Length: 350
Image (cartoon, rainbow, N blue to C red; front, side, top):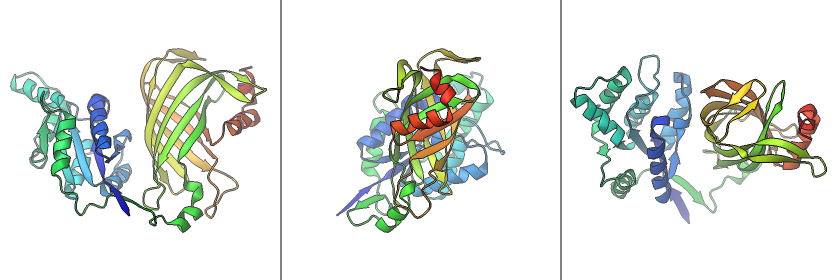
């Protein structure tokens, strides 16, 4: 028996539309659809945009949330969000454009003769794109984002869409067994460290979501919580956290060349703190994770799953900060690694 789920690429300016984006994604999940939320990625070059085009190609639907911010642009002054729409339109993707109240207010401000900045003018021009307008629906007091989505999905013809198929006999078991080291799904235990700063140690759990098939295994989603490590229990070989010093983060990632993982994360810190000369403030942080698949016992012909990922974190906004990041399948493995390689930092917590 065949089970098929359809996917929708969600395009939007992220920080100005977080609430609307959450409502849209919730609506897609309620409709048993898979949201592809690659607006997490910070795209700065056309080469990196190729990754976005690949994911649009794999999606069945394209949904754009139109707000008041045009956003960062390429070398020609075109926003990456507009490029996503243009590419989806070129590929004849089934499309829905939702004009939020923020965008409608921008239009109203223009009609009132209010002064607009260059970003706002570009957004209005984008919103009046002839091709875009034919797909647009306005949010009103009676028509929420969820309601617009329901009406769109009830009328869209998904015949011919590839979808995501799971059959009892569809898994390529030979491929999966040979590439088991690339199956990164499940719970991991991570630790963040800063070079030359023994005061900084944050750890927690990461849930990695992955569809482990030959076509889709390269796309990952990370969801995690970090906590301050205040001390260690040497007898039980465990880290003790201060649960009041919490940061949650999540992001979308891509496996490159079956060895490297890269992704952009959005983190929310719920506390203020100091680590040496660096001060941590409450709020939203954006950054980049660069990770490698590390397992000396594994190669490209193995039935063993990878046990460790290693790389770096690089906070890009609002303040620059970087350090080491390690993920492990097992808590005791994490503890032993710290003991072997970061003993000074670990012992400072006793």
